[in-house]
Length: 148
Image (cartoon, rainbow, N blue to C red; front, side):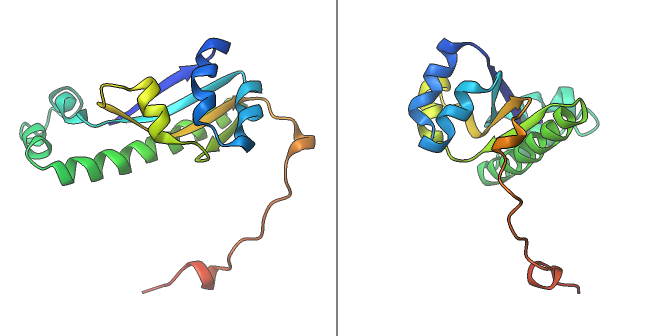
C-alpha cells in the first residue's frame, strides 16, 4: 500500500501548487473544490508487518532490493490512484487526473524530505459539461491489442 493522498483544499495550499502546473491546468486546479496529490511512499515496506502480516519476510524483501521496491511502489501507487478515481466517481464526483504538472516542483514544495514522491494530481468536484472536449478517437482493438 504505497499510495499516499494529500488533499489540497485552501487557496493558500493551491497557491503552492500553481508554479508546478502546466498553463492549461492552472484555472482547472484553482477552480476545483479539491485537488489531490497522489503520491508514493518510497519506504512503504516499513508498514509491511501491519498490512501484510502473513508474510514475515516481506519487509526484508523490499528493504534489501531498491529496484523491486521502486517498481512495486510505482505500479501499486498508480493503481491505487486509479482505484481512488473509480471510488470518487462512484459517489458522483467528477475527476480530472493530470500529468500536466512539474512533479519535481511539487516534490520540492510539498515533499522536501524525499520520502514521498508525487505521481499525478486529480482535481475533484462537479465539472462543467459545457467545457468538456468531445471524446478523442481511440485505437481499434487490432491496433492496441494482441492475442497469444
